[in-house]
Amino acid sequence: MSTTHKARLAPTIAGIVAVIVLAVLPLLAIPGLGILPGPTYSPGSLHLLAMCWLIAALALSYHLIFGVAGLLSFGHALYFGVGVYGLGIVLANTQLPLLAGAVVVLIGGILIAHVIGAISLRVTGISFAMVTLAFAQAGNVLVRRNPGRLTGGEEGLALNTAGVPDFFIGVVNTRNLYWLALAVLVVVFLVVRWIERSRAGHTVAATRENEMRVRVLGGSPYVVKLLTFVIAATLATVVGMVYLLLQSGAQPRATSADFTLTLLVMVVLGGVGSRVGAVIGGVLYTLLDQRLGAFASSPAIRDLPPILHIPLSEPLFILGTLFILVVLFLPGGLSGALNRFNPRRSQQTDPRETLEEVL
Image (cartoon, rainbow, N blue to C red; front, side, top):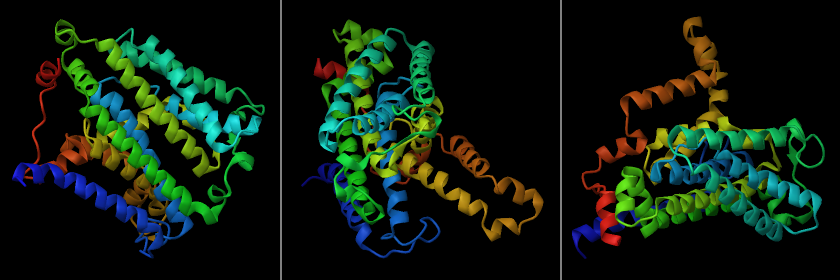
């Protein structure tokens, strides 16, 4: 086996090992060490880790739009909300079992993404961002202004467990939800990887660099961008449905534009254009968002002088400061920093050259 082949195979082997380790984590009694609320087998830790995997999968779907296609969307959370609220509404108002309801919501999510994408992609740049923002705000208003049984308004929508299998219900089954969330992350990662390495992925990357040249070479930028948009939205819908099961309900923030901005922060934090970076950014941001509150209220922070105690007692201040430091000193994100220590990192292929090869 050649050295080049071994170098290419190493990340795959490392990924498989990492998935196996994460899969057996609920069976181990590893201490939380302040990062998790308890040992790894405890329901609280498994719930937090499951949320990390789902948010990382959602960040991966946003990476497909922003990092690969170069489309700055402010409405990606809308499709996540379609999964969360769509499945919640179907289960609450029909007698469909979980799997059948999920299929109905998935088809609806694909149709919604296709319609919105077809309209939004008629414009580019900041105009595209504003159009996606308008659709997201419209969806958020519909969710918040419907206080009846359909969406629950500001109070959110509780999960109707009548059609949900028993092994996904209750604290005692948090382990099963953990494994489901991990499976979703693996599937989303593999789909994104396949899209990036496919002919359509090379074309959309080349479109990001020079759309006019793609047209001259006979490509169809609009079609491949729409395809990428719909696939990313579909992945977000799938993540949203599993998120509903994990949280046992839906909240209006799932459809808000600020949630999409959070996804943007995750992708930038991990490193724009990197699949692994999107996963790292999603996991790290979720851990910080969930655990900084406990850190900010700890005795170690309370005993500090007021000049330090006051800012450090605000989780958002700590999170914002960390993000600014990463942007200033790690312009390639966390994944870029890791690559600097990897002497065998592969060089990025010029998407224009790749396009010429596939055409």
